[in-house]
Image 1 (cartoon, one colour):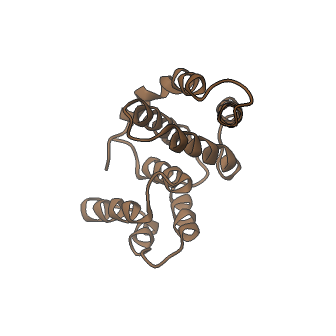
Image 2: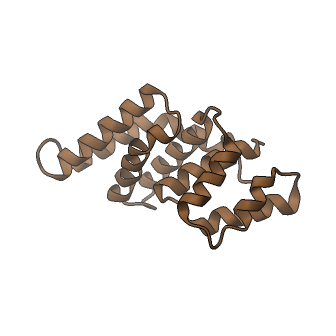
Length: 160
């Protein structure tokens, strides 16, 4: 089982790109508070129904701190690929999440390699979508190949 910090990092990323909503984060915080010892900030998350999205993101960032966000990011990328392959999200949604991750990459530490891959996929999708270069299907397949290695990371830590 991964730490609360890992989950906070994962939910930070999901909330930041719009993959999950504030209510899902609050439910997660409530479940941890009911079952475990927890950092004080988790109570702040639990009481965030009236807070703005940015305030909740800030609290989550306090919990996960300035540590390495690679494990939560890997889980998120793997989950996005699985959702794309199974049709749970559209190509447009998938590439919207990829774009958001790339644009918000400066808010958390992402390796240059991953940041470059997100940038390339974002640009390629834009060009294909506009009919300038390549096809959306081709870029979709490239994304699945490039990010497919992260599918194994979805099971890195199970839901708390």
